[in-house]
Amino acid sequence: MAVTKIILLDIPTVLPVPTSPNTWKVRLALNYKELTYETKWVETADIESVCKSLGIPPTSVLPNGTPKYTLPALIDNTFSPPALLSDSTPIIEYLERTYPDPDSSRALCPPTSRALHALFEYHVAHSITAQLLPVMIMHMYDKKTPRDRIHFRQRTEAALGKKLEDIELRGKEREEHWMKIEGAFDLLASFMQTGSVAGELFTGSNLSLADCTLGGLLLAFRYDSPDEAWIKVSSWSNGKWTRYMAVMARWTAVE
Image (cartoon, rainbow, N blue to C red):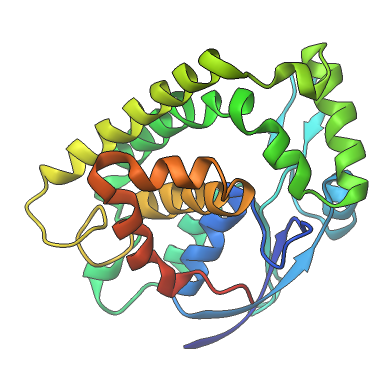
């Protein structure tokens, strides 16, 4: 294990584990690369003020020109001056550049695969993540800290013009929406079956950036919605995602 002085900024929940797919994405990478780190827990309501105070750059800029701050963020105090980063994929790319594995087959995102990983992340973002709010919103709300529930409700209801309870689909519409998400997962499973390497992961037995992305999403399902989303996902694609997460389990420690 490489002795590093890394701080991962993550979002607390009422559970003993986080539920953000994007922060899990970086945590999986850190665990896979066996880098020592500690977690700084920051409630959603405090993300902007904490990031500004630490000098962490915004993730993006809103249409009105206002900087947008999100987690994960990472501070690497191993070197001087420290590295201050935000946004999951740039963080993982930094970790790869700074702490390359001597075994090139263990690289999370080789330079030659960046375009493919970008295409994969586009598919996941539009076909899966963007579809989740109508079936996951109350599961997400329930797992937030009491203070973050207030912040989440105010922010989401202001953006969508509805109460959280009215955003959530029910009955037949809900099941049809889940079927749409299932189709996106089945497509991923079919792509993975076309590979020539053995193993449940995208590149066989070693983790890749794509696995960090998808694994983080599946962990969010497992922890945010163990009684609905995870039950459904576990049954999809002939049990593919249950086997997939069994392999991922070795990299899911929360430091």
